[in-house]
Structure formats: C-alpha cells, structure tokens
Image 1 (cartoon, rainbow, N blue to C red):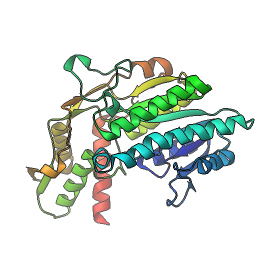
Image 2: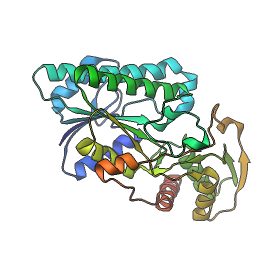
Image 3: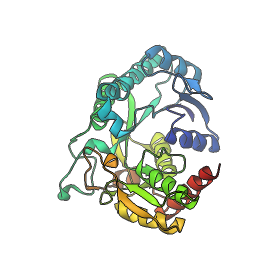
Image 4: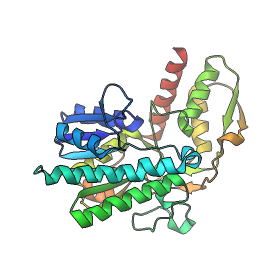
Length: 310
C-alpha cells in the first residue's frame, strides 16, 4: 500500500504513520505548512494537496488534517468550518484532478467524529451509523458537512470514499487539553511534589474510550476492506464515566489529591452519555479492540510522569 497521510504531525497522525511504516508500507507524511519533519501541505490550497499526491502516488489518502478541539470551534466557528469542511472539499477536488490526469483513483479514508450524532435519547444507544445526524457544536457541524461533501462526491464523481466516525480516543502524546491526559498530567505534577489540588470538569460524563492504536488499526482495516461509500463507527462499544477514569488514574499514581470542580473546564454543551456500536466495522473487516482501557491509562500516566521529570 502506498499511503498519503494528511495531519501526519498530529496526535493520531503520528501513530498512523508509525503503524504504516511498521507494516512495511510506503508512506508520505504530510503536515501543516509550518510543521517540520514532513511534507508540508495546506488544505487551503488545492495545488498544495495535488502536489503531494503527485509525489506520493498513493493507493490510499488518509485525511486526518483538521481542527480537532471542540472548545476551539466555539471560539472560531468559521475557521473550523473552513479547515474541516472546505479543506476536505479541496482534498476531494485534488484527488479528482489527480485521477483525471490518468492516475489510479486513490481511496480516501476520512476521519470523522462521533460528535456528528449530537445529544441523543437513551433509546438511541449504542449509536449506529443509520441514525440521523444532529450536530450540536461548530466542530460537529464541520465534520458532518465534510462527510456530506465526500459522500456526495462519491455518488457524483465515483470517488472511492470510506468514512470512519471515531469516538473518544486516548493515548500517550495527546494534548492535555483533552480530559484523560489533563487528569494524568495533573496527577504526575502532584506526584512530583506539586500542589495536591486536581481541577476537573464534568466527572459524570460517560464516554466510549478507545486506545489510539486500536483507532489506527481500524483505519488501516477500512483502507483495505471497507466498503466504498460507507460510514463506520470506530469505538469500543462500552461507556466509562470520567469519574471512574479519574479513580483509576489516582490509584495508578498512588498520591493523595483534593479534587475541585473548575468552571473553566466545563463545556458549553456536554452530553451525559456517548457510546457507539462497532458491529458494522467488525462484520466488514474483522477488527476488534486489542488494548484494555487499564493498560492505556497506565501508559498515559507513565508518559506524563516521565515528561514531568524532564
């Protein structure tokens, strides 16, 4: 497989590129225009994307480049739409132009988000791909729009598109703006002698957490075996409360803490439960999660502690 990865310098992108290279695949890793160590592309410019395609000559384009932090989408909705929706339209245009030049049409594996489902009734869980979308944040709207663009282009122009709706994924190296690494980094600072106060947001939210390496394995499975024009949930299929994740991390750290609620860590819209079904993905590809949540949490804390010692 010859692969081009947009957003290769991001959290998931690093893991995906590493997995592809370990599998012996030929990879062109594309970061943003200001990222070092990869081929720079700019999703604001079709010519930039097309140039990367000409270099990579890929069988698969993994489109990960995006604004991924939900709170940022409230601060800058238009910029989120521009990057996530219009940027994806430009990727599609570049792929169409590339194929029209006589090259083989590459498959696009698009990394969407379960946020597109929006707040749901209890009867909707676990969430299936057949549910109508109810995006309730600018980030979710941008991803829903990007999905619609790609699936329309699959019908209109015969693009080979597979959409992966990823639920909450975690792992070492994730920004501490996200809840699990934030908790781990605070605990590591406490273990290193810092203040015992640990600031939290909504601990009652229940989420479908999946290790980033399992997420990447799902993307690879969809690149090989996913059905064109289809959408697949990427999730564990079990919800865990943030409160329980915190309890496990405290036990791993083995330090006394004082937990305090921080209003700044509350999201404008925070649904109480989010859990999906990966039945469609498993049936099509045979993929199944391999890494238990407990192992992910131990590794995330160990990485945070190591970083604290530097």
